[in-house]
Image (cartoon, rainbow, N blue to C red; front, side, top):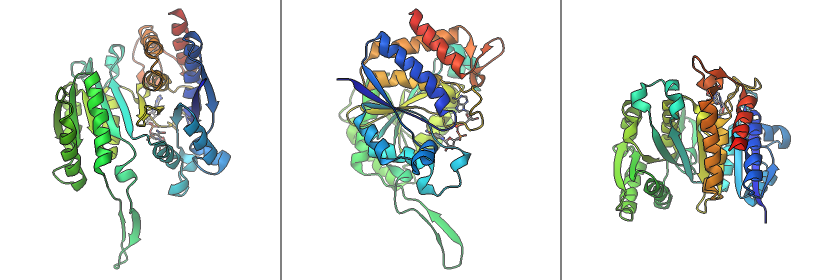
Length: 360
Ligand code: NAD
């Protein structure tokens, strides 16, 4: 039986970077005889234009039927004025939630070839290899009640709610510990337990789960300190596990240690390793349509998909090695370009990766 992958290019640079990722996916599908069938649909602004909603029921049904989903990015100024419930980003939150994708894996790896692209000193970041495990379907982005209301004195007041149940904390903590086991066996749980009730429960439950992982060294850190430590001495971290909002912010910070958000893939997994794979960056409306976006984060997301959902480690490694080769050749999109390197566009970068795969 063929394995289905749903392709959702999304908005902005999404279709441009996805076109290159699909070329890479088709190349490994052929060379490694993986038997993938690709199904295409829309999400976000593109879905609003086509279906009137950011995630159509039929698209969700296709996502449920697929073994994995590959997403570009959603959002853009064209849809910014719409009501919150029908904005492109709601489609993304809804598909993550509907598919039960609670575990978001965001690696921050600094390729040695790009040490100069980081704004931090090379000695602080060279060899950096951090994995941030972010809880993705709970916390303040989903909590209710949430509202803007008018107080008796006529002033407007807005509030959100940050709920976490112990089951939600336990399952993401397990992902964190499992990942740490596969890597350097160090897990840092990030919270704000000195202030937030939800963080106090978070810390308690993580401590309970730790009893099942005596081989993993667990530490705790407040989120403000973690933000500081990530730029002061990022190599102290191996795996970080944290909630939805803290993970959102810290993983963007970690991505900049590596020089470009255009290099970073991500995976969002359910309890059975079905996943949605996407670059960490957004739809970059400022460069959309110019053919200059970096497709490597999306291409590396394909590698993560092969490894985590399909267990095709050899094909995943082939893609990662091909990306290393094009960087060795000196090819750079604008976001990672430096003096003496060859500036290329989205399509040239994607085709160079395919050519490197074929040469292997
Ligand atoms: P962004 O990640 O789209 O862009 C931030 C900066 O990084 C921009 O200067 C952009 O040009 C650059 N950049 C991003 N990806 C790049 C790539 N592949 N190659 C080269 N440069 C790249 O973040 P933003 O500007 O805050 O958001 C733009 C839109 O994207 C918004 O509508 C936002 O809601 C949406 N967004 C979507 C997702 C997602 O789909 N997962 C994530 C974040 C933001």
